[in-house]
Image (cartoon, rainbow, N blue to C red; front, top):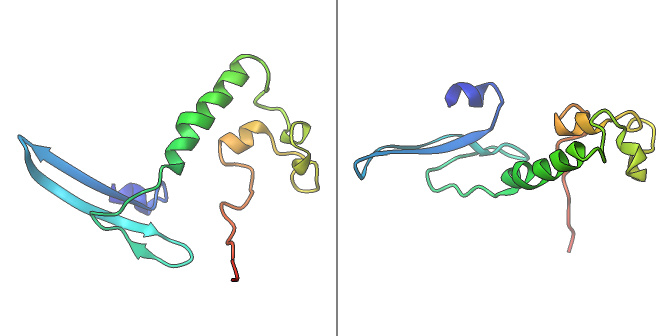
Length: 114
């Protein structure tokens, strides 16, 4: 797992291996948070389910509409979302979004002032 963390596939992991009810390995690897600051993962790190939601909900729904012929994978997103009908986004395809090749920022910081 360290190799995949170093390759950038994911920032951290918590693993537990047990045999016959006995914990053999229980460790945290990498950083649970990488931006805006680095926070090391711990064995009690709780991960949100947003990453699973993308695969289990969005991924399956998109696969269904592509299978039904409603979205061509090479179709431009700007045809379906007017927000993409701007310079720099007009050529982004559905496939680009699904395979993380859109060159859109991964996240944007949101600042709240009270």
